[in-house]
Length: 313
Ligand SMILES: [Zn+2]
Ligand SMILES: [Zn+2]
Image (cartoon, rainbow, N blue to C red):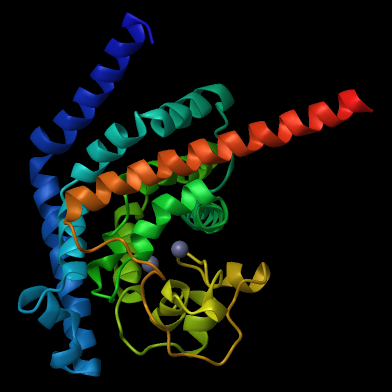
């Protein structure tokens, strides 16, 4: 990286810090308050159904488990915007670089060719489609799973569990979200309203509200189906990957069609929730690098073996 590039990166970073935390502090406070209110609303509704003793409300405010504390730390990191700084730091800014290079290289902006009212639905559907495939890759590729298992290490659903995502998970998500933005542009009309609704869906999905029905099955993924996705029971593995729109799992054959609706949350061997958020976050990063180097070594070994057998022939 030359001097010019470094100053470009620091400029961009300073821009983000200034716009978010200094010039934009009022909006930040407003969105922080909105996140707390939305979470409180979902937590109260959940308590009505499952009873206060079993609710996330009780765990968060009075009897937090270690899993709840990790959820709380990440809730603060995400809702205060700090997660973006961590995502840049943990990924060395690579996905952000990649996303902006892709944007400049393609310069595809079909948005103006389409009527304005169609921008938002097209963007939301395309972004959700990308998120579905990103999610599948996070489960499929061993190194990526080491990042995503951080989210799956939650031992209970506390509503705010939606934010329990490692900074690298967030960084990779930038690419998935950028591709539809490149093609259609980020729609401005009603976008904040839809993002608020998206936020609410995330909270509901990570609660124990017993809502399902045909909408939960076919349109917006229900908490029941997302619980199945988080379950460590073998028959639940690799099912219900949808981010918001449940239809992708039906279309691509990953919808859970079994009859066991008693999921057990967490990981088989769960190394998380014991040593605090900083250790869990850093260890996830090390596990990712380890898995990445092991995959690299494996590919190299297979290539060398193939070459040797070709020479012998
Ligand atoms: Zn997952
Ligand atoms: Zn989840």
